[in-house]
View (tube, rainbow, N blue to C red):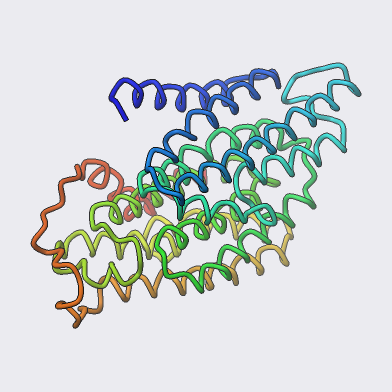
Length: 345
């Protein structure tokens, strides 16, 4: 893709998200979402490969359906109440439709099936964009409408996402699919807490973005597409693999790493609000996620692959990708737990 085309597409991608996040009128929010979707399609399909084309088609169909549902929901609300204001979604049917649309946009259970398939068909960098930047616009809409959305549906969707994200990720060997199920599980945590404390949802989203960016950066630098690839990465850069191990443990929510912070505060708030079943469910589901993070950590950092003859000699190839992103995000992924008193106040 030419530099000019890349610049236009990435600018449209950024502009679409910013328009949606900063609008109070449903039509403007919808236009932003459409810009966002249309900008990411060429990025996904730039690899001339059947899997990339399939991923782009699946992404387009799901996002177009979600956008249509949002338009239908807002039209229904405007018909019943006479306002297009995003914060004035008072019609129960419109709110239920909106939750379904946002769940489809974000990849929340039970509308999560497209996300692992799309990530698997895209490149690592595109998968990073879909897992991070593409979550911002729907989360902004959820943040604006949360006071009117059904608590029961959101809690059910959140706990189901956390469970499915942990359970389905156990069986995966592809790192992009593992990250997709990790994304589903983390979004489940965010949606669960959104019903009671939106500030905590923002903290969880920020931590998720940092940890996911760090993890994808290590996978891009080490060219690890499967768990087997990570086993041969140690000889290329031991420091990089230590960073990967720390990022994985942080994603799993182990103290004293940063990933423990949102999980701890979310569970504390849910217990305070007497949502005990939801708290127990998502806490147990995080153990499932932790299992496949630990498995990846063990393969990458604690084993040396014996089959050096059959595999590519990665250690002879120096990484040609810039590691500035990683050097910025890894300190925040590992060392933000001491800031928790500031966040709690």
